[in-house]
Image 1 (cartoon, helix red, strand yellow):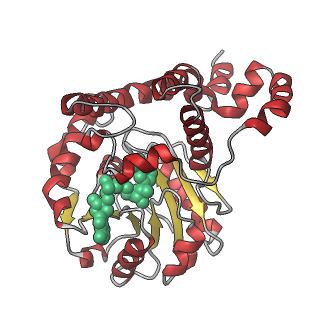
Image 2: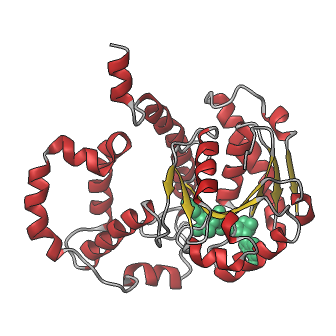
Length: 325
Ligand SMILES: NC(=O)c1ccc[n+]([C@@H]2O[C@H](COP(=O)([O-])OP(=O)(O)OC[C@H]3O[C@@H](n4cnc5c(N)ncnc54)[C@H](O)[C@@H]3O)[C@@H](O)[C@H]2O)c1
């Protein structure tokens, strides 16, 4: 595979992530065929992508105007328009049945040598690729929202994926402004979701057992890991603050951490009562509709700011400093 900058990429599913992924690819110079599997996508996708592009131009992520970039985008419900795509990114609901049906529709129209990928958060790639005609050419491509500002991307190989093709996807994604990770061996949750869900589980344990409130946990998280994670990651953090101390703490702390396999009651109750979080102003925190909207806007604003900081401090920041000393 040799996907070039101006080649056509398909994005199927135009919800929250599909729109920001399409934005990222458009700004990187690709033509994008964006498939709306459900009618409601057609009502918001154009406006949402245009808004992302407008803000991105204001923030200096692209020097092209939304009008110019939008000429490379087609939004349609017609899967047959995917036929020229060298790569298709599936971005529909996290449901195996839905993804299976969507893969069938995509594979019925794309070329045999095109790559098919999924933005699944946690369905193992080895399971998803069993639903496809060409498992060797199937990969996980796991983005972080908002995909056009974040540097994160996991390229995940399933048991049957051709790792060499995975390596070319990894190379290609650097041209999308990503600092990607290649997960050579499939594991449920990949890298970040395994790390994050270990933290979520412990957060529920602390709240459900009365050690802290939701507000306390969020505050601690913002002010401790929130201050070093973007620069360091977990291992360099331990290097920087003294490995031996972590070794000593682990022996006593690990046996006390939560290892429950049940979905916590706190989240179960919210979901069963219809709570979706900020999107319907019903989550772990209380929101008026106005506050909920403002949180969404503030998060967007913050994602552009933290991108600037992350670009100032890339993974090889120290090597660069030494080189230019
Ligand atoms: N939201 C995140 O932060 C995030 C991060 C990483 C990965 N993901 C993954 O990306 C995928 C999409 O997530 P999202 O947050 O964009 O979801 P979303 O709810 O915003 O959008 C879901 C989209 O799925 C499609 N869809 C809905 N019902 C369908 C059906 N019956 N048949 C076919 N398509 C249908 C539609 O295009 C809809 O817009 C999921 O697999 C999710 O796990 C999400």
